[in-house]
Image 1 (cartoon, rainbow, N blue to C red):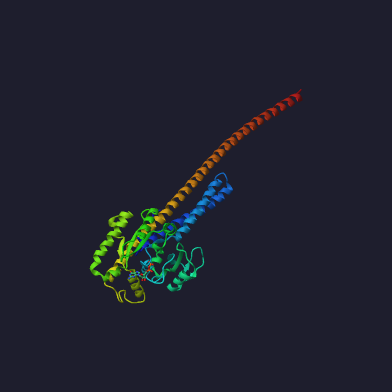
Image 2: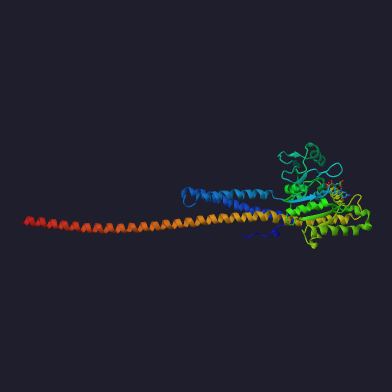
Length: 420
Ligand code: GDP
């Protein structure tokens, strides 16, 4: 049945389109789940009464579909939008993640390097905790220092390992809207790029390359994305030229440096990776200062104005550019996640529903054939009964007549004998 368009409900961020789509597809699958449960129960009942109407294979397939639909429903509730951040160590990946979250969640800076993959996502319980790979244990996280300590000292973490950081959803709209943010160790520290991609990137909807605006794109950074684009068709890549606040120190070179970075980044996306057109590339490359945005947002949360404190020249423009990046990022990730995640589910759903329909039609046709057969048998039987009834009536009538005749005969003979 046609459903109401997404615009029916108030949507203030493109991310909410994903949430709405998730709600709707979930509702459809719950309907399908109810149908398949009801249908399989009826089939079990009918099978007990008339085993020749439904065969065992059909019953087994229906029970199979039932568990498949249940599986899709479970995956659906866990579906989220995933963004992965890459770049060389100290380019500011953790700071970008924190700036987007609006608070210091991940440890960053001197004395800390992210030496494993960290996935920040919304916590269902409202508590902050972390779970390391292969473990179900929820380790409480009270603060960034606590998290840094847990990551650095409590367990020797492998660079390929994924640590889930669950953070209260009410603290950040990205987490509330089902975005998971993955921070990675620097691409310069590993020879295992392929393993990283297979383990953590195959299902990412968006990749963000955090580059250092104070230097040019490095071969290791480019190399990583070349590998990504061999494994994924047209990955969505954003390039953030971070530390753009440094440009405030050299305003005379600002335009020239920006133009140069822009050209190189555009060439990389358009000509080398061939993941977008020159027009699209304009909405994929940004010049930002994650540190400034993070500081401003932390201050704002403590009740101070956004632009309070000592700020380098051009802060306002850089802040706006960061917000522009966030908007483009939200549009891109929401669109991509709906396509990659829900398209797959809806195709699977359509296939299952079609298969179920085929089985139901076969059963329906078979039951009609059998009803028809039984009706014909009944008619034939009825005709036979009528014939026998007719025969009986005529035999009885004949017998009656014969007996009457015999009685008349006997009477005649007796009266004749008496007379004689
Ligand atoms: P990561 O290793 O890529 O995750 O980098 P971090 O986020 O840990 O940042 C490394 C250092 O760079 C930290 O001391 C940050 O405060 C600093 N940093 C990050 N972003 C910026 C920025 O935009 N401008 C400046 N000046 N420093 C930054």
